[in-house]
Image 1 (spheres, rainbow, N blue to C red):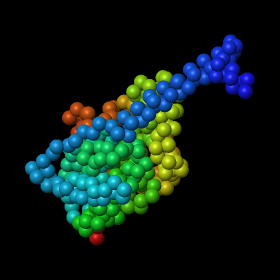
Image 2 (image 1 turned 60 degrees about the horizontal axis):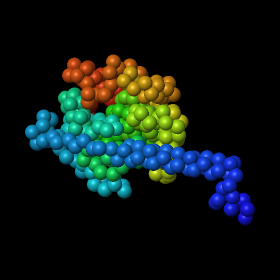
Image 3 (image 1 turned 180 degrees about the vertical axis):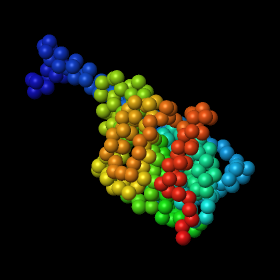
Length: 310
């Protein structure tokens, strides 16, 4: 009782010191948790950019294709028709991007007779929900592939996938478990969503504050407990044996450049690595964008030719 009374009404100097240290620690932890929570809120529910494109007057005669994601409801993608019974290339947007930024790449692929689909992940463009930085987005990509395969005018067994950062992680993760994916081109992929959390915290300038990064990661895992046993990509890449892979390393983001190189080295052949002068397809100048499109098109032409399935 004397000990409890001393803590409640301290009279000795060391009791006051213990209480002061406890109070400072408590409010410091509370402050870190609040900052991390706000940061995580901004990450999983980012500001969305909507794509206002009139498909009726767009070259290539794209059409709106509806599909359903389990637990997320109805969504829609844009389908650019190519050669009947030819492969389909799925374009996966980057984090903080949307399908509207990919229509010129879709047109470049369609010009070479590919069927092409572009869509938005959760918390992107026209899609509601929250981002998990790749975990549940794998199921969203699979729903798009399933919907395209059921059309009847595409090859249901041959798909290519392109993606950047978030889209690159999803493309690789899906390809390790879906034999229909025969070729993938990925720019700036990361090994696991926690890596993206660290990147975004550092990008916001909060990584220099003690424990903020670790707390944000912990809160992210607490928010997504069903994915805690999902292994990182490096542990799954050997399943890509026989799948054509193009890794595009961008110097614009050193952390993602390192992860791109590491994933390439851990992946089985056939694979190739290109180092770009600049990344961020949506922000490229016209000449850079044209060269980038040519590289992507030439990769798929060589690894997944647009011939009709017999």
